[in-house]
Length: 144
Image (cartoon, rainbow, N blue to C red; front, side, top):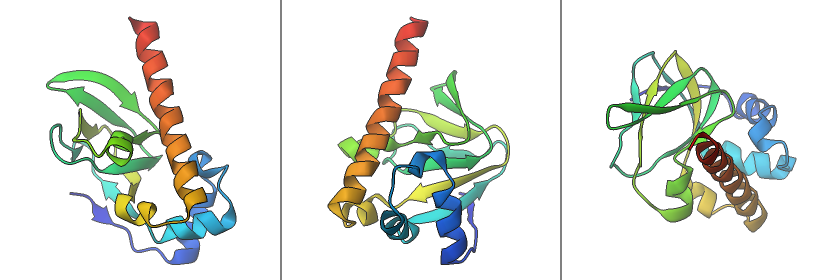
């Protein structure tokens, strides 16, 4: 598993505040998120999540990853993309394996901590995750 970076709360706040994923969040919601995420780094080739295991949720800070279904590459994820959001919404297991294509930094979301955050923060997370799922489905439909 990747190493957790040791950054202080203010640095983490600024990092999160500057990510497109969190543009619609208020500053007070960002402060809630600061305590609910960890910054993780994975080296090129590292397996971040494994298909069939319990879902974890990540948002890419920088770097690239690939999604695999079995041995078949089904997509590439880049800065600002999230994965594992189905686990947050549906409490499901991973439907794909995610591997680092480059050294990659991620926000690892503690789903339980988000569920204990304010209702407005939870709603914004859910909206952003649903938006990403819809974008991914629309892209897949276009390719079919």
